[in-house]
Length: 387
Picture (cartoon, helix red, strand yellow):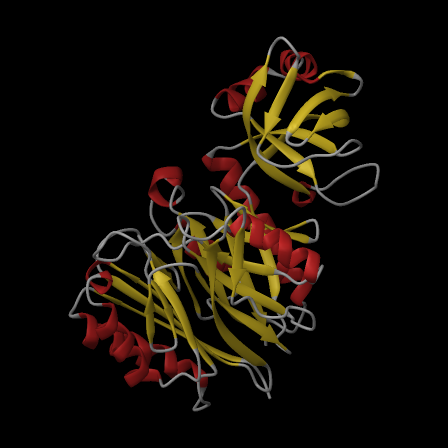
């Protein structure tokens, strides 16, 4: 049985009736099949009346399982609403595949943090994760999931809309939750991940020759800070101008080949430097032998990178085509980055012939690079579901 996906969005309105309307829109894309799952992204007044919003989704769609979160803004189709009251609903009938909703929490112990509620990931085809940034160690959990089930893609985004009390707002089935993370474990459901970190490589590739933790001490046998300065001075003026807007470092996570593609690099900011030691700190753990390369981010490179990344996924689908997509875009993108609205949503619609798509503006985006899944910033991650 083919995968069927529908999406809907309602702007404004009273939370209960608006949720019903968006759910009914999403149901229309399922061709009469029951909704195996609904994923809900809600902003504005929905954050003040979350139980009414959930009631409306169940009334209009009757999903077998549901997850969702509060959002600063939502996405549906080619539309992005970056503020105000709106609800975006994504529904899927997986045609024999299975989706299991879970709620995971971090529990502080005497000298550690224990994470509860995570499903067994071996045998899964993928997962969707919607964490709260203040009560859940998402980066540590992603590393643990990779250790447990290497190669299983995890996509999602950090909840960005607060409840009336100021904390997180998460949904699972008929529950409103205020901490941890909610997610979906998928089995027998084909998922094609797309990650666009929105940065362009600049300068040559360099090999880490000495490091400790997240501190790079040497690059290509020279003090790391000295080597980066030399590289920057040798760049063309236009490239130096790009770097002046934000210096980033791309780290190859997995690979051993003479040349690396753009998507092989995990892009991280420089966290500091020690001029006396000549070392630099990067926002990721590193090891000797890894290849790094300077990266820069601006609106043009971010736009080009997203279009290219989506094009590669379209080619990978071949004649199969997509049934739908989930879109997780950074709340630092949108009008603030591109100077206009609907940029990422339109790119997804253009790439996949306007298949049903929904998502939200996240406070951090989750997606795989080099075999592991990571928490990103200023990124658009897209979960593409083939027909």
